[in-house]
Length: 107
Image (cartoon, rainbow, N blue to C red):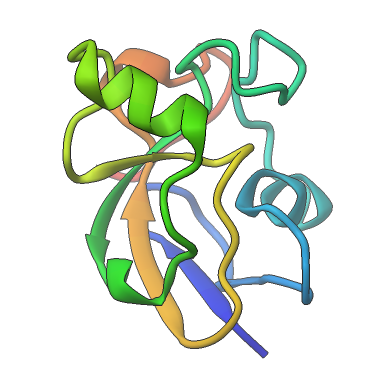
């Protein structure tokens, strides 16, 4: 089963079910994750900073390409509501700008 390791959140790696977005898997694992537009790819609040394993992620979606071109998404960031992990493992973290005030982060 594909795994997402979140370096600045406590707990075990997130299991990513087949076909699920990273956001859906993160929420299913019990983590609160910012997503202001309701997971529709209309903002960048659900972004994930990818630290390793990005080659295992699905190709960028149209919203991700649009935000990347506009400079609102960095090359090492992906929208958790858009991206899937069909196989392998990815390591990432919540960016400083999108951390939630009530969540305890590591580091």
